[in-house]
Length: 173
Image 1 (cartoon, rainbow, N blue to C red):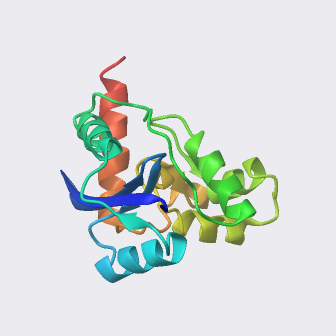
Image 2: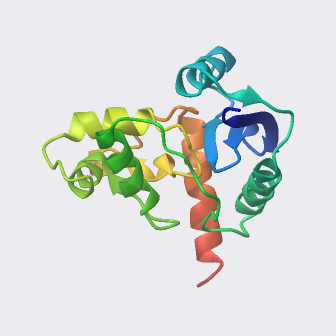
């Protein structure tokens, strides 16, 4: 028996997120503007022999933590993740995952944190390939001089996520 894989939709203020989990971790989150074909294709490539199942308990936990995050009640996620990518991509995603809630880093700072200070464009590319937006908060990565840069969910979604975190952080003060 292969890896069990369950997919579903989670309603958020950004729209429906497509999510995929295995028994051991969250593997994919697709933002509303991303293509459903891209989501399905990514899963086929990353988990070609997976046994599709209608439900896994981790999916309920993911939905609850996402609801809490969007309600401003959660700053960190406690779910296990499976990061499928190259060694450099995973290093970039780990650096992004370490960015504190309500904070931002530039692509250059992320490249440095990933151990390759001169690989800014590669770090930006890896950021764009992040399979777990929101959980691995690539919306917290900005271009030099405070410009937003890109975002797979669109710049409006990036602005909304940053505003959500800023508002929730301000409530603590």
